[in-house]
Image (cartoon, rainbow, N blue to C red; front, side, top):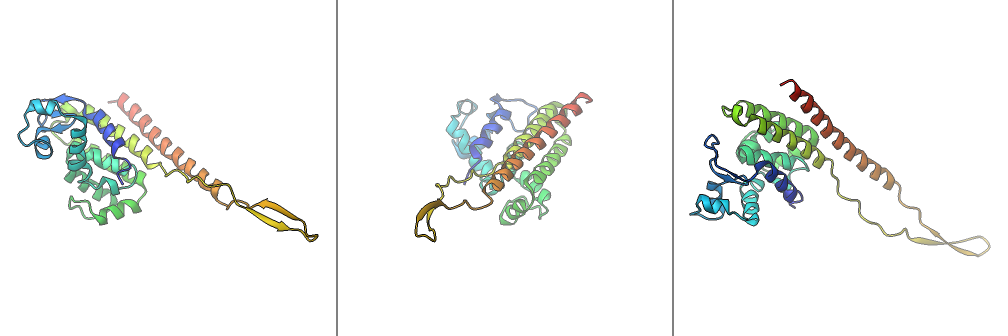
Length: 236
C-alpha cells in the first residue's frame, strides 16, 4: 500500500523546485526534479527540453513512482524510512540510496532492496535508521566536488528530510471505531432482572496513551535535530 507516496512526493517536489538547466549540475536539465533522460524513458521517448518544461503533474507522479518509489520498494518500507530512502534516491539515484539503507540496517550492500532489506528495516527502530541514513547521506554529499556550489541547499534538504521522516515514523494507524459495549441481563436472587453494560476490555486507554507518547517522541526528536542544526549553522 502506497500509504506515504503522495506525501513524500509533495515534500520532494518542494526541494526540487521548478525548471533548472545549470551547467554545473551533472543531472542536466530538470523540471520539478525530472531529468530529460527520465522523461524520455517513462513518458515520451523523443521529448525535447520544451516538452520537459511543460510536464504535467500526472506525468511527474508517473516518473517519480516508477523510477524512484518503486525502485526502492517505498510501499514496503516502514513509515518515515520510506520517505528518507525515496528522497535520497531522487537526489543521488536508487542504487546508492539502496546501498546506504542496507548499510544502515546491517545487510549486504548490493544496491537492490528486496525482502531481506525490508525485513531488516522493519526489525530496527525507524528513528535509528533514519538518523543513520541521513548522517551517511550528508557525509557522502560533502565528499562531492560540487559541494561548494550546491552544499548549502543539500544540507538544508537533508535536514528537512530528517525532520519529516522522523515525524512520519511516529505515525500509527488510527484506532478503529468500536461500537458501544454490549449489555448483559443479570438476575438477582429475588428474580428481578436488570440490564448492565459489559465493561470494556482493558488496555484501550493504555494503547491510546502509548500512541500519543510515540507521536510526542517523534516530534521531540525532530525538534532536537532542528535546534542542533540551527546552532551548528551559526558557527559555520
